[in-house]
Amino acid sequence: MWTFWGLAVQIIAGFLGAHAAASASHEHSFGFVGHSLAGLVGGALSGAFLQTAAITLVTGSGSHNPEVAVDTAVIHVMTGAVMGAIAMFAVGMFKKG
Image (cartoon, rainbow, N blue to C red; front, side, top):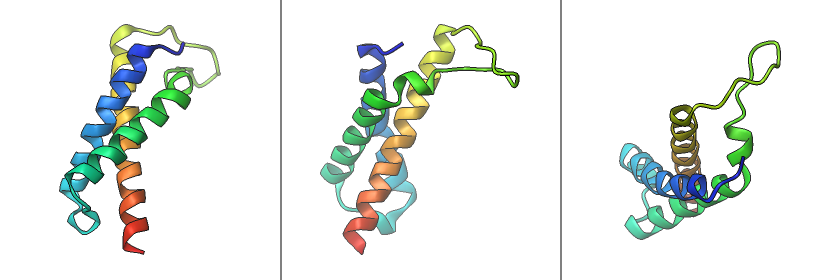
């Protein structure tokens, strides 16, 4: 289910994920504002387009697992953070190349 709460969580997590990735990889650094924008955009895109797919939990046989609030929150945070880091690395590689 798509929610504005999930979108907001993924945008914030994208911001944090981009800065975490930037601190781990100095060769792709392009400034605080650039990292912030890349993370916010990455988190927003994941929140807008991947939110429903990311929280779909299935078993090995394909049956649907019930959603638990804690699981959903953790999945939103991790999806936003990873997409923020990916967006930061993509912009960093584009600027270097």
